Image (cartoon, rainbow, N blue to C red; front, side, top):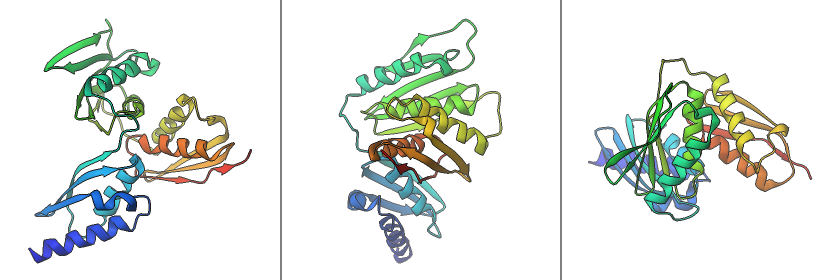
Length: 240
């Protein structure tokens, strides 16, 4: 018992060492059993969520993490409204045009689109603000775009991206970089032409110039939303 308490103290200290997590660290509930750490609570943004998980994973003795951290939604919404907005975004995305789109509604799986030559299928489920994406898509690019679209719905408090890739393909840093660039280009509030992106070991580096600090923040958030990104280093300069 004392060993587990000592490990929990180490996890708390590791999480508190991340300045972007600190404001909400007190609202985090941690439990540990046989090396399995459960993290519950609410944080302000996806960066805080990922940084908290990364900090906890570095603590010796933590073998597995059950992630129940949620992001405070920008706009409170009911599950039905979140589901509808996620599905609308998926249906409108040209990259996903060949995918069937289905959604769970009151215990029933409804088909919203079923192309005759469907190449992949996405199932959407929303429970307590948490969006779960299941099914298969043709590549990691499609998987990442679908996840970001779900995160962009302002009522979403978490996105569990369980989409498989069929046929299987090897993920790559170049693929992650392409996905971040694609997301930046899709964001109407970000001028992607002036931003350069590099990825090394799941860390995304943003360089270039933007006209406003708010745009630099939006670009960073977009990168954090991309599946597989563990950290974002924002080196964007603000030049009016």
